[in-house]
Image 1: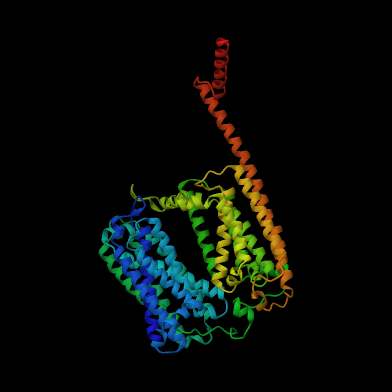
Image 2 (image 1 turned 90 degrees about the vertical axis):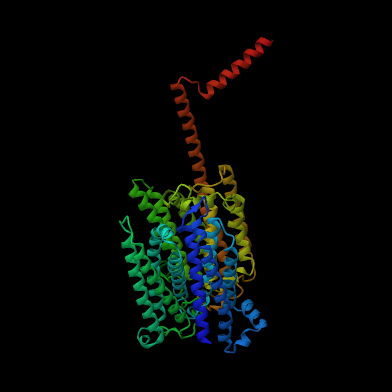
Length: 615
């Protein structure tokens, strides 16, 4: 039974990787025609269908054999519809596996008709989410350092899917299409390979007891997988050497090398499937029961002091990975501009860096640590993520930097990555979300939906819940401040007066939410904080009301800053408009043409003369 479970897990991973690789190639690597799939992309559609179908079959088989393994029963018991329904609706692991199967089926259905590049990009994002969903309930989650172990494993799987999937997709292409796709994929593969090596190393280090693990099966698989990965990196290096500075590439030799790489990758995925079904020798000290360790993933921190808050650090590998990617892309964009001879304002870079630092402090830093044990600290982290960090990111103008540095179309008819971003910004969805009313509803309305329903209590119980909350806070804050004070191009031209009204509305709604939270007489976390048995937190209701007051006090300051910034921008725009009119007047006078005011005076004189003649 365990062997069959491993086989279906391998089929599931290989199908998922191939699906992501084909979507990646169709969306970014091959040419498009005015934002639609070209003939080259259509050639991969059959591979996408086969890959997504394989993924779906593997996901269904994984549900059945995982259930049989959990129940320690025969296959006939696991195939009972009532048992399966209970597993996929009531058990978290079953829900994640069912979600993955649903995503695989969705991609298979849309693989027949998806023509627009933006639709394929959306399918790619959904596919990545479906592939990594079960990772949050893997056996890694049962050990300590949840944030580090699970986060590193998620990064590992995503990077592998891009790397392995991309190789499999490129292997399916013709020599002509491969010549177009490989140079762009080579850059992506380098980033993915680095992420695979680092995340794999971190994951193995946190899960292995190195004093006793060297003679275990798990260690042997890790060593074999490491050797295979090193071999893949070496082949990738040979690919890049083959591409650099050569007008004529030996595509026959390249194809042989690519075939070898694809075979090694398939074997590596098989070892990964075997590894995921093998128990790891845990690091020492993780077996002692601790309610905080069981729920949060690390032991209860000491009573909060300024030094503990500012110097404690519990790495959330997934958020760190996201932040590192954001910083790397931003730095890459600035380097491209500098190499081109253009300048990028230092103030924007500093603003972006400060925003990233605030996010790290509120997720992995001391504030992020205490936020998981106390509602008041959670609310403080929420305010930083939703109101302070987004201001820094927005003032860093990442959209402007991306539009100035992203690759453009390789042919006159290709939209390219830059064109796809522009199309997304000016799409109906982009125009809808940049409506100031919509941005306000998401920014403030979601507060009531999260904290005055069971959603907050449910999300606090899991790592993926924390991740979703963090990403939502950031996205809602970024969207709101992008609309009201953003320096990036906006598909809507929003008058300054409307921006000020929206800011006052946000301030009022936020104050109302904070007062409502301070007035509560019951705990909204449904026992989450009590289950941690934090010794330095005795009155949970008082801590909850303190969180409401912190939300009111801290939340109003960024909005006031945004109001001041809006007034300043309004004055600057008026000044620029006045200067433009003056320049236009001078230019017209130099050309012997009367300015607008002179034309208007002449018009009034004509009216007066006509009235005089009529009288």
